[in-house]
Amino acid sequence: NAGVTQTPKFRILKIGQSMTLQCTQDMNHNYMYWYRQDPGMGLKLIYYSVGAGITDKGEVPNGYNVSRSTTEDFPLRLELAAPSQTSVYFCASSYSFPSGGGNNEQFFGPGTRLTVL
Amino acid sequence: EDQVTQSPEALRLQEGESSSLNCSYTVSGLRGLFWYRQDPGKGPEFLFTLYSAGEEKEKERLKATLTKKESFLHITAPKPEDSATYLCAVQAGGNNNDMRFGAGTRLTVKP
Image (tube, rainbow over all chains, first blue to last red; front, side):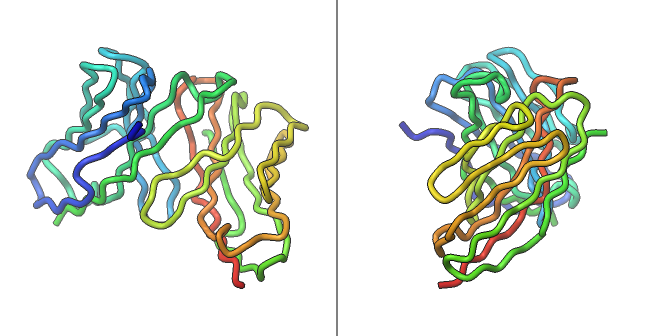
């Protein structure tokens, strides 16, 4: 049981380039999330998904796109990378929404450190 | 707008010196308040969920409490391995899945 895995671990992009951050979970969780964490700041929710084929915007969605074709995978797409997107990106998953009671805690991946120059 | 503020930003303790971390929140209808631990270079690790004022939860040397305006994470007789950044997050009633995080408290416990 690997939990939540993310690739790549590190990436440097040039302004205007595009890339996809991969996220996979093997816990059969319905909910998946993408966050970004800037130095000295809390995590900010970019997008989330409550199941295959269903996605919705979080607090900071501009400049990103997501898709959820399977339960396991939730890739995050950056189009036209900008320096403001330099950050550490975390993917997370949970069985249901976290405040739903029971064992609905979020499990986080190890993160992808992205630099846009 | 929903806000989460953590204090202090950083805290240095001697091993065995108990203290508390604060998480103040302003949300429209709290659905849940969460505490996470984050080690350098890693993703957050879940600690506790609190749902209503007066609720308390414990795990080893950690105890989380909740009031209508804030939550405290009490650390009793900390050890160096408790050194980490502790994050607080809230989920408000308006959107089931929108989580708001505080900036965290960086705890260092010296032996």
